[in-house]
Image (cartoon, rainbow, N blue to C red; front, side):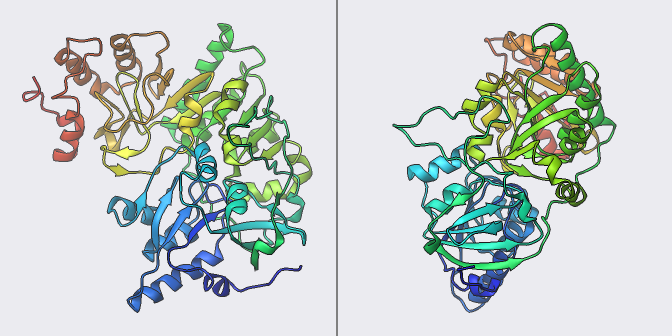
Length: 497
């Protein structure tokens, strides 16, 4: 290689207080790991001497602990966007030790290009291969890597030999032109290739190569339980009924699925449902269940932004690359999450709600309205533009002390106008074409846990006037009861009339 080889510490020494860094990766897949570890130590040493050391961070989505965790514990983050899921970073954000602004994932690359946000002066990318003429082949995710590589003045490469060079060809790198000359993004089916398999940069911008051999930091997903399995069956049965009713084509439609154990359970149930034909995926995160169903022939193609797989599943893919490279495509997130493409393809969008209210509004991000959980992610990119937008959630949490269905969401991420279907383990609320009072009655009847049904019916009686019968005094009474007593079932209506 024509590039300078560096240790992680040497690379970190070239990063300064106030720098703004854009990282490759999406979730803990495809993220750099060693330079940030060294950077955290450098920040701690500088701060111990009384010198400030903080950086701005742009990522594709969440990252591994070696970015978000290390830098949060080192108090080295000035600002962070657009999505995170690390416990230490979450704690720092909720204590306001770092600035965080939540953002639809599809919007970040263009926000950077438009100049809405400060330009990243450094990019740190994980690659499986790099050529002397500046072609960078990424590893198991893309994220915002093409945009930050182009905008940055200086690029560091972590050349990770854990990921085989034969990955080349699984990526489809494409950046749309910006207005006023933007044209349609020419994806008309999930498998359409529209770009090239590498990022091309000026070789002079590459400040050095750090060689590594490290697996992704994707942990094992929480196993499915009876609640999540029942949610999965409810989703699959609903989609089956929509096919029979002629509201979904018999050939089916591409599916977008969120992240986590509910998403895995839903896809697993869809794979088992004989009324649902083999289908394609157009999503952001490709999880273990997709790989399993692909091997069974139930998923025929998956387009995404990352291979967010457990280590055994990722190694299975790597051991059978000839098979999987014909069935998987990894794209930048402004393509994988493009609202334009979601609407054109007619996606069935399935995402998880943190809480919903009886009128169909969704909170995806905040605990009791104030504490950031993870972020909005790509759910807004998809649900507003889907052929059919579905939100799933267990009906309760903390042993029944929290109802996921409340009178009014404590934070609004997706309004009733974007939510067509709500599904819990108890059933399905089809909200299409319903007035607010009809939506409330349907959700209470079909989705609410038994111990909360009467409470929510009583709430409706408190708000008898108006098109949407809210009672503004009592609207957040469930949350107040939880904050005061630790149990939403202890709601007191006496002061809410």
